[in-house]
Image (cartoon, rainbow, N blue to C red; front, side, top):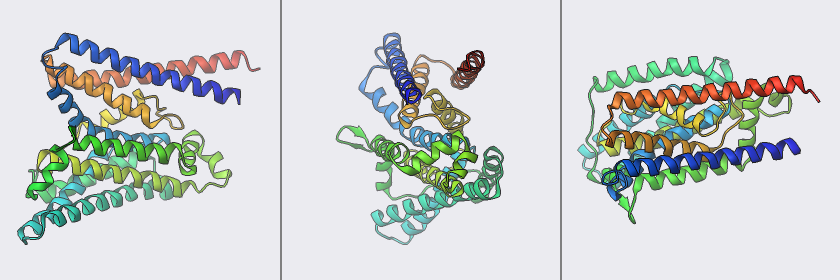
Length: 334
């Protein structure tokens, strides 16, 4: 009971620290470029960009909670978007109702990404292949299928109304950001307020002990990768709408950024620890850094290097912190 209380206090302090870091970064960027960074246009632009990365990061964080990883994240998202685009192209050519076309196309995208997530889940949960190896393989497969369909180019042909999903504004708030907020709320309720969510944490902590407690770990893992698939589909819809096209390499940098945001938000890369809200704050921190450095004229490649360095630094700090705790525990076993 005492250990749980201490853990909760530490977790809350970590979230407060992340919020403080986010606030400091925001203030620093605003001071360095007040005429460009701290403006309604830039804030709106960040909200548009944050939505697709945020949805994918939540999907990644749920997988990481189990001790897994999804390297096929963006490629499954875009393969689903490509297939959905083909369906919408055919419906537009047939002169069908635009809203019906968008509805059917969106269902196809989410259903496809759900199936792709289930493929990952099957090999991980039932066959027993390591998540990194499975998703590395499916990443290549999904990318290859997408390239064969599109011949390496972008495809489009949506109804004009489809653009609103990724570029529209509702009551002054970017519409994709509203979708992101809904995803955040639903994910928090599922992961942190249900018995299934507790099982996800338990698997990440100790899968063998979880099996012995009577929980069907295979079923839970399948659910995790299928949920990640659904979130990939939602992100695919947002990206296809925002860019008015679908292409295999859209969002290819999001895999590393999603892992960085999740780990930065307090998740243990080995599983069993982390929160959705922590990931959300991590995404916001990365977005502020990325937007701020771009406005300051820093080369985009250097921004990627900085984000990669942040991931390495956070992982290193976590490793040495845990190593120090293990030493202290061995010195004071009582």
